[in-house]
Image (cartoon, protein in one colour):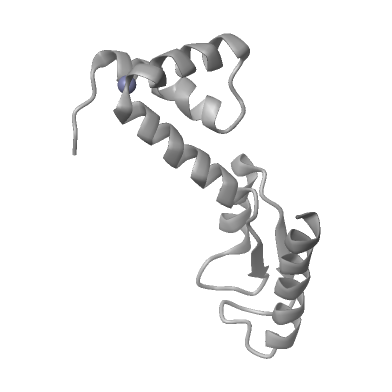
Length: 117
Ligand SMILES: [Zn+2]
């Protein structure tokens, strides 16, 4: 674990916002100036961008009878990330009896990504 300078610690919230496309222009500009001269933060920025890309292509499928991870916990996790959640009513944590339906949901999702290019 590397220690960060105070400038790096100070810019981290803006760095995350810039990587996720949520930074105001002035903050995004400060981040670009900083990462131009700071390899550590440039590396962090690259990782945050990669995570943002994955999140943008995330499918969350949940059974409303899941007693391992509750639906309300999943919604609480997904809400701040604005991730859609597909709920399969009547199924639990392992989708017993619903695997063909799960396959259909996943297949449609994958096709939508391919179609979107
Ligand atoms: Zn830095």
